[in-house]
Image (tube, rainbow, N blue to C red; front, side, top):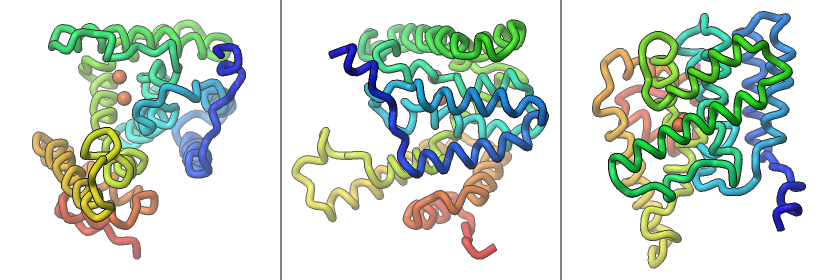
Length: 257
Ligand SMILES: [Fe+2]
Ligand SMILES: [Fe+2]
C-alpha cells in the first residue's frame, strides 16, 4: 500500500497551475534576475514532491498555502529578503508532507498540548523544507530560513513579524475564501440533514462570522492593507465572495477599474 502511494504524484488542478504560473511571474519582480531560475526550479519541484494525501484542509495542506503567504509578504514588504521569501513558502511545509506531518490530533486537547503541537510542527516544517533547499541554496541562507520557519508560530520583530502578519491574512486568499464560503460543511461532517438552500445559508453565515472574527482585532492600517489586497486579487474571488467581502469590509470591490 505504501509503496503504491509513494509512487503517486500530487496532481494540481488547472486553477492551482494558473496560480503557480502567476506566482512565478510575480517572483520575477521580487528576486534578482540571476536568482530567479533557482526559485523557479524550487517551486516546480515542490509542486511535484508534495504528498497527494492527508489533505485535511485543502487550502492549507498544500504548497499553494506557502505561495499565497509569500505573495502577501511580497505585497507587505516589496524589498523582502530571500530568507523571508523562502521562509514564507516553506513555513507550513510539513502539512504538505503526508504521513510525515505533525498532526494536532496526536496532542492533548489542552493549551499546553496545542503549544507542543505548534512547536513540533514548526520544527518539522523547518527540517523537511530545508532538506528540499540543500543543493540549490547556500548553507548560510538555509540556516536563516530554518530559524524563520522554526519561529513562524511565535512571530517577532522585522521580517518574522511580516511572515506572521501574512500568515494571518491567508484567510483572505481566494483559495481560503472559496473553501470557507462554498465548500466547507458547517453542519456535521457532511452537512447532513441540510437542504441545499439551508447549507448555502449556513455557509453565508459561517463565512460572515469568520470574517468578523478575523477583522475584529485588526488595526486601521491592517484593515487598509486587507482592503487593498482584496481589491488587487478581486479577479480570483468568486462573485459571491466579492460581494459579501465588500459588504463586510465596508469597501467597494469593483471589477471595472
Ligand atoms: Fe504553521
Ligand atoms: Fe500558514
